[in-house]
Length: 277
Length: 277
DNA sequence: CAGATCCATGCCTTCAGGGTATCAATGCGT
DNA sequence: ACGCATTGATACCCTGAAGGCATGGATCTG
Image 1 (tube, rainbow over the protein chains, first blue to last red):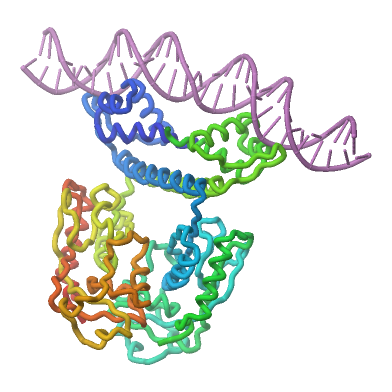
Image 2 (tube, each protein chain N blue to C red; image 1 turned 180 degrees about the vertical axis):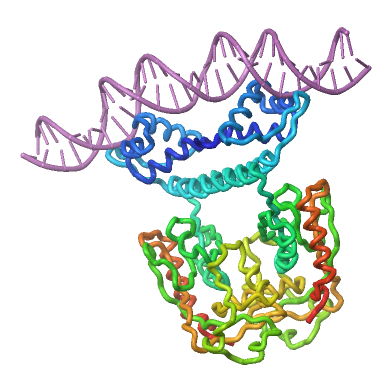
């Protein structure tokens, strides 16, 4: 049931050498062993990894894919073990998640100044799973936009920002300085939740090519500025609240410290998210 | 030497239950087995994962870290196996890498229209390893900026873009419409290569807070537009070439098809990267 | 056609992984 | 304070997977 990393390593060696004998030699095992292990791996995965012509070996499509997956997998393992050792040596880490368009560097730098020993990692949050990384521990603290699922989380509202409509420059409404929801009736609104694409850029590409328009928080629009798009405030749309979020049961020093610094930074910061230039 | 995923799964169960007996039960193994496996895991990793008080079990810092790593690791494994199966079933995939600021969606959509069966994945390239993913197979095709290490790659120049200087709005030079390299002498230039941070946002944050300025390709500056920054063309800086890149030995249908479509798209596209609005 | 090369199969050995029985230590109730 | 229950660790045994060696079957080459 569990994938065997040893077999996987054998497979990688075989894929690289393209030759059972030499691969086995490089692995310091006998050739028949390798032969059987690869067969076992194919059986476990349920698909052939290479075509054998008693004379040589060639990867199948699945085999090439597995070779690729193995690369990232071993890299993931190595990085993970390294982080475990770092944790063991007492190295502190703090993962700060942030939704697209929210600027966190100011707080991060302020915190880094107070706690130089803590390794800080920034984790861009997908719009379709803003909250999950906080709940499952992938992030220690996050900058999110409401609404999101707040169960199991503690959140502090730190600001709000207006919504804007993103339109192609050629759109009739693009000449208006501001818009209302009523004026957008009848427009094709691209719902972000329709597709879980890896990037929001695609949505804006669609808008640019005239497939529809979108209503998004101001800072999101700012993050994807393009010469062929414009954004206009939607005056009667509800503002979007931005907040600082941590797991409800997190009582760790570095998290509390960050919260303290971050909210302080916020207080003295000349730039408020709610301010529109 | 190889991390054992079975032991890791055992550890996760133990970490969740906080109790050898119940964890063993949930794993359908005997408690002594679990006890030994966990000890073995600790020995292999070289660090204690939990503090045992004959009465209960508590994770160490390293233990918590490992629990977290295990989550992403198992997710990686699952996703990898899924992709291998997809490849086996004949599902075609095409990973398109792109450097920050380069827009690929137009070509991607054109290609998707011609080859609807190919799963397309977008991979944002880090500025400090633009080319590596193409060489090692993580990406099939990429939109890159010169210069990069072209060994083992084939590239087609598809455009060029000017460089601009990014300055705080408050900077004296910000009032100028354009600048020359000579005028930037004496300024503190933030070299991108100094730190391999996970995002370029931090650099712009530094610029905004007056720590220096940067000279970057126009499209990069456009990607990180902020109200507190301006960018001005540097008239005598060399233009940056953008190109479409594939591995030298890639002869696969979907890659060649994409190249054909992408260059065609480029030819008819009204927007050229070299055009400055 | 004979020899060389290469992968697969059969058989034996070793050892990690799993089970049962039991011990030692710590809480907890009386 | 003492006895009992609970929990993790240890001892010992068994099974099966991993590895080695010998060899077979197939294909390429001179």
